[in-house]
Length: 154
Image (cartoon, rainbow, N blue to C red; front, side):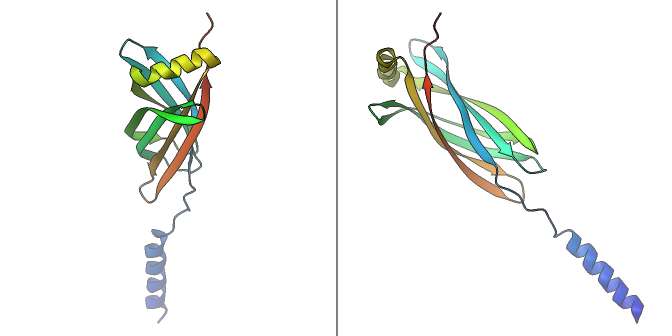
């Protein structure tokens, strides 16, 4: 009588052990900065620096990150460039820095640079989202930030 009950209890415990998992906490994605890397006659190379804070004991894959960069002119956002990247590994229990290059056509940047010369700085805004995949859970994390870029004094 006891033997079948013990076997049944052990089987239930073994099968349910695989169903128990720790809750996955939502990660955060913040914009660390927007940089102007290189300027040529036809284009400007920018970089968006993100910091992904993963509070979980397992790593994740940033399956996709997508964003737009604007400059602000008189409080109005003027589109500059779109960037995206896929399959970025995110470390467990901490912060992972990610730099994503993006190229902007110089035509809209001429206005931004002229505004920057006039004001002493160019105000850039990044709006986007990142999809982080943990295998058992996926999070869509939005981010945005406005930064002031000042020309280097040299």
